[in-house]
Every structure is written in structure tokens, then in C-alpha cells.
Image (tube, rainbow over all chains, first blue to last red):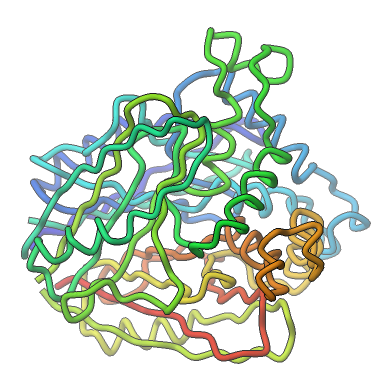
Length: 140
Length: 140
Length: 140
């Protein structure tokens, strides 16, 4: 069995943003030499997500508005008890649960086994600091 | 290490619907010959889900109502910017994030290692076209 | 390839609660002898979750309030058709979809490859009965 591990780094200037990381994951798969297996891609931070969806800027604005409706940013400790700890990012912990922590992708014939429109995104909900994403590949 | 790959096809007549695919996944596990390992099942389309829950029609109607509340179908570009592209399925991209893209299931002793009520579903949110689900099995 | 399987048992006195199971998963990884691989941790019940987030009691109270807003407990069959079956736990089937069924975690150098604040939780939404969580580890 082969395994391969990579850490991707992010530092987004805005509070909430999405970054297409598909090409970086493809390169990791290529580097791994794995022909048949699984590729895990996960946020290593609990106010961020990795998810698969469309690379369409209108949809991304829709997601931001929707997530803001479902779990509004509010630094006060009145809405979120978590913000009594001195943090202001309770909303980000909620948004991340909607969008998910991780994706697991099949590797077939040495490539990500993807549908036509599948793209992998890093989702940031508490930006302006260093964040990491883990890529773990196992297979033959 | 053994690996096995299958593609399931769907074409639902309705916009939103759920299909129990547990028996198809069980057959794939049996075909694979894997006794101990992991089975990934994922939608290959970004307006569809694979999820695990109960095979109970009332619950499925509850899910549909709830998802429609959380992300209503609305083809106009006023609610969803994504629909400015000529698409009318922005709601489906949102519903799929709630229900998830994929499940990973353990294989133990050659069988899906499931709790009593766990059943795997294909969740369609933008039907009336060809869609695919990937089953990828790795193990020994 | 090595594989290892464990079942964790839970019986929470309250309807909704979160239990930090990180140390139990670490022990399973240690027992497995796997140095490089993947670790699946999933609820075996469809009214429960396994998720990764912060071990902060204020945030957990925030999650409970938020999930209750998104899918309120209501045993009547008026809100949820599922409760016409004699069940009163339709809300739990919804809450579990928000928080997710499972996590897949990388194992690197014999340890969970975690970011600083990542902790694994069992999430119960229909407590006061026996529940199980599956830990499946594969790798070398």
C-alpha cells in the first residue's frame, strides 16, 4: 500500500471566502503514484470547511448570503455563548457544520474519479489568519 | 489490497426524490471480494446527495418540506445569483450541502458494518436528467 | 494492510448531548498498530452524529439552541409526518443531517493527524437508550 500526505496553507484576507483547490489535490494524487485508492481532504481548523460543488461565483455569493442567514456573524455574547470566551467566531463554527469538514474522493486509474462539474473548495469562515488543509492519499 | 469501482445510474422523473441504494451497494461489496475495508459512496453531481438515514416515507416527506424551507426552489435570479447563469437549480446546490455528498461505510467480515436502521439513499434535488453515483471499495 | 474495528457504547441520560470521544479513538489507533492510513468514526444510529469541532461548553450550548431552531423537537404528528409512526424523534433525524454521520481522519506516523483544536464528538439527539459508534481503521 502507498500513502502520501500533504498540507496546504491558506491565509485569506476576508472573513468568509472559497478557494478552488482542485488542481492542488490533483497534483498530490499525481505525486502519490496511487492508481486505485482514496483521497481524504479535510480542513485542520474548526472554523473552515472542505467541500465539493460548482466553481460559479454567483453560487458562491448565494452560499455566503445563505450561511449568513443560517448563522449570522455576531461578536456579542448575547447571541452566541461561545463569544463569552473572548472569541468572536461562533458563527464560523456553525457555518462549517453546514458545509462540512472533509471530502473523500475516489482515485481510479491514477486520477480523481470526478463527475463533470465536481470541484474541491476550501471554505473559510474566520479568515485573516494561517489555516491548513490536509490531503491524505492511500491505495495501490 | 483489493479495489473495486462501480457507477450507478439514476434518472428520476421528479425534481426532488430519494432512492434506497443499499442493496446495490451490498452487491458491489460482495462483488469486490473485500472482507475488511472501506466503501465510499458519493454523488458525482453537485445537485445530488448520498446519505444514510431511515427508509420511512413520512420522514422523507418531512425532509423534503424542511429542505424546501431552508433553500426554496426559485428559478428567478432575484433570490439566487446562480440562476442568472440561465440555470434554475441554485436551490439544489444548497439542499445537497445540507444532506451531504458522500458516505464512507466500514466493511467487516465481507459485509457493510451497519447499525440496525442504517440505509443508504441517493438524494436527487434537480431530477429529470441522467445522474451517476460512484461506489469505490478498498481493502483486503 | 492492517485493519482494526471497535464499537463504542453510549447511553446518555438527556435527549441531546455531546461526548468527547477523541481519547477513545486515539486508543483505537494505538491498538491498531497502523502508522499510515485512515480512521473512519461513524454513528451506527440514524438519530446521532459523529463530528469534529471545539471542546467548548458555550459552543455546545449554542449548537443545541441552533439545532432546536432549525429542527424543533415536536412529538406531534402535525409538524413531522414521521411521528405518525408512533415515534417522537423526527427532529433527531433532521439534527443528525446538519451535524453529519461520520468523520474520516488521517493517521500519520501512528497518530491522528489533527489540527490544534480538532476534537471528535459523539452527538446524541434521541438519548436515553443504548447507542453505538463504529471505529474502523485501515492502513499499514
